[in-house]
Image (cartoon, rainbow, N blue to C red):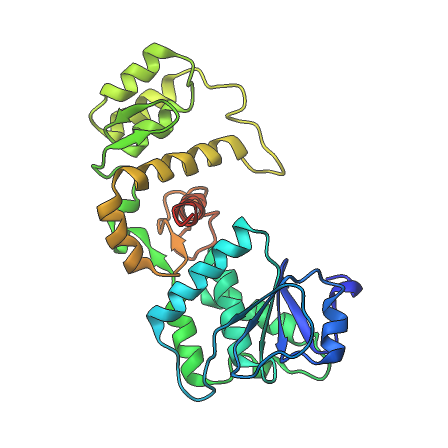
Length: 302
């Protein structure tokens, strides 16, 4: 973190997400350096200073754990503002401690698909950069900590809903091809050579995802399928996201049930058979499918 991102009374958790104590004149002066355009006030106090941006009030009591459903919906609404409208947030409570950490951490964990352990470690690292602060103060309220861990507990695909598998028996209406595929694996494999009409027809007719995958291994690949950007197969990842968005839009009733079960939790394809699309048993894999699902999930909220 560069020197211009370190402040006296608050800190940067992630690009566009700051948290700290209730703003006074000095904090407002420092906030001018950050381009923050939205303050999330978790106290019952009024902010008296002149602020040209938006102020969102979401009071959280110090000793009363908040309602779980209300927190989930609030985090989803804030995530839309963060990603769609390019908002930069300053999240504050009276002292810049567990309530501000709670909300800031949930926003970051939800949109970037991180589990509670990853987020807590980052909170501790950032919090120690504030003058005279100790990492032991992070989520120091036990009830808030318990809820935080519950909301960002890993959601492992194959221990729960089969909807997340590309091998599930869900029809997918493709917005790109304007065709209906028998499963999401067939649609994803179709993206490997989208200009080959015979191949696409073959993928539309294929009955099982296993056969679709077999055909996908035999086809001539589009030129950008194996291209890497910073070590990342960008094209195939975005094709997967588009596939999953179409799956959601085709199966809205089931998706409504699934997303209620997921809440804010990070998504993992929990398998040791694939460390690229999967997470691995110890979560050391790249988890591309889990990350793609979280992006598709968030896109469905817009």
